[in-house]
Length: 300
Picture 1 (spheres, rainbow, N blue to C red):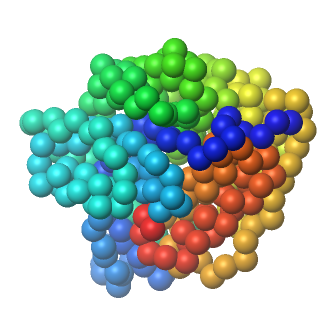
Picture 2: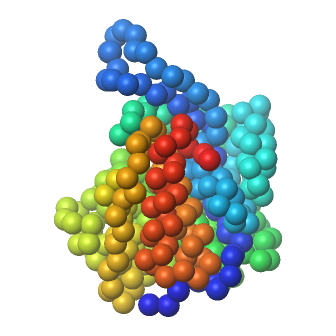
């Protein structure tokens, strides 16, 4: 297996969602119909935006393509990313609010209650222009969320088409199990990409029950390389030649798992797009994902 798509550090394009996270950290189960003590924090979120922020934190040149409302929240979300070193090609839509997600988080799990808002207005023309407008880009990473909703699906499809036209390598993060189950045709939309990332729940939806290795084998019919993330238990990579690699989880004390998968993707992509072998890319992803769970929130 040859190293990743480039021999030097690359400029990465990330396409997808930029929203406001309302993070609710609670120690025990919510007391239904009553009060539950929690810590509440408002800040930037969205799978694509989080991955872009972690890539910039890791020293990558990165451009985010997304859609927000023409409102205070949208301007604040973009300003946060610019301050973090992310180049933003973000359309501000009037008449639609920036998306918001309430994240209910404990040390081991998070549940999301979502209003995608302007993220559903991801425009194919904006995406295509952005992909063509970054001359030194070598890789496009697409959050799976745009493909899971009718409003944003054309933008997600356009991103992959524009990347193929330019000769960029491509990766897609499967996003979330419940909307994947509802969408039904996700795998056909991503057929032929270079790398598919999914966690254990998403792999079960897309490939059915089985071990991570068995699920990766099923999914390799759609993507040249498949990574199945297993949280604290590490991850598995299946290459196009059928070779399997795995990495153990990094033992850390988890404070908040929000954004851990996005950080994992960033660590892996930085390494792989700089020419690393899959084993080294897995290790880099595991290290950054572990760092993410030791901090509060979805960003560095």
